[in-house]
Amino acid sequence: MLTLNETHDANLLSWVDSANDNSSDFPIQNLPLAMFRRSGSNESFRAGVAIGDQVLDLAGVAQSGALPADDTCAQALAACTDETLNRFMALGLRHWSALRLALSRALRQGAAEQAALTQWLVPMEEVEYRLPCTVGDYTDFYTSIYHANHVGSLFRPDNPLPPNYKWIPIGYHGRSSSIAVSGQNFHRPYGQTKAPDAQEPFFGQPQNGL
Image (cartoon, rainbow, N blue to C red; front, side, top):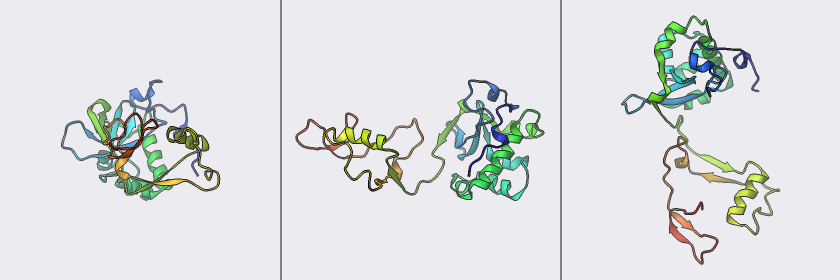
C-alpha cells in the first residue's frame, strides 16, 4: 500500500533552486521519471528525474556512485540505466520507494551528494522525450458510468448506455501502437466510419471528432 513518508514533507527544499519556486511543477516532493536525451542529439535515451527546471540523468547518477549502495536501491537504479523503464517498473513498490527516498535525500538542501550530482543535471529546455516503456498490449475500459454515458452519447445519442453496462465489465482490446508521448503527432488509422447524418459509412481517417 502506498503511504506518505518523509519524501512528501511539504517543508523540504532542494539545492536545485528552481525546484523551490512555488510555480514549479517539479518540487522535491514530486520526482517523476521519464526517458530523455538532449534534443537533436544521437545520445541514447535514458531515465531521468524531473527536479525544478532540470532533468537529473540517472545513468550519470549510477556512474557517480553517490546514492546508497544497499541492494534494493542499487537494483532500482541499475534498472533505470536500461533503454526503457520496463525492468524498473517490474521491480515493484519496495524498489520504487527505495530509489525515491535516496533521490529525495540526495536532492535536499545541504545534501552531501550535491557536488557529485550537479554535473548530471540537464536543463529541461534542452531535452526531448520518448515513451518510457515498451507496451506489449493492453485492455482499455470505461472508468465510470459517466465515462461510458458520455462516450456512448457521441455514437448513440438516442441510447448512449448499453443495457448490460451495469451487469458486466466492458473492456476492449487496445492497440499498443496508439500509445505515444503526449504532444506528439498521432497517425490515425484508416477504417470505416459513419457520421450520424450520413447514409453510409466511408473508408478513411475519422473526421469531425469521430
